[in-house]
Length: 112
Length: 115
Image (cartoon, rainbow over the protein chains, first blue to last red):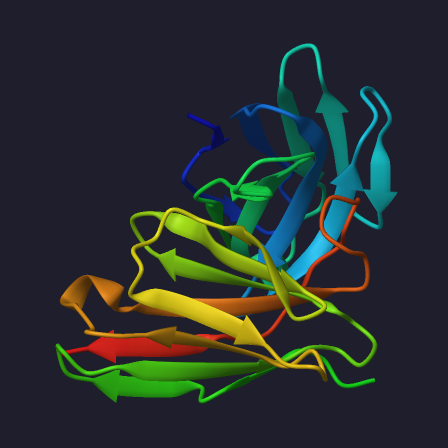
């Protein structure tokens, strides 16, 4: 059965800390891996990773995919209270009934 | 450019009733997919439509159905509601057809509570 596992499930850090969120997957017909941020209701797109070893960056956020290890990490440096959210990892498949398989998310809380 | 619009935002129903949720995708997007989000299971795929055709369906019972109209707007219907159907139902649209590297844009969801 296809699965995406995120760790930790929840995390509390102080402003200014650096955090690393993990995502591992066992999915057939892998196409790409995506990260989303869900603050209230609507998840918003962060990154799409298709090639192993190439880091994607956007401001204080960065992510990298390791196809050999079937995993990805999302790094957030100098965290701010506005980074508090659920971070979702999802794997897009080439084929199959379920095109996008999500992990259960990591709930990040950044306290001042 | 308006985002993905879902209506209603909140809904309270009783067991046995049926419900219809609506989703208007971003203008120009022809692909619409639906997800159920619960605290225990996370986001689970319901179905995906492109050009009025259902392209994929997740592992949900037949009580869950959907459709897409010629203007790309989509509806999903849940009949004979059960307590376990209480969830946030999210709709997402994308420009790319299914099977491509598609970036999904999500709506704010419909929070359904079944009493």
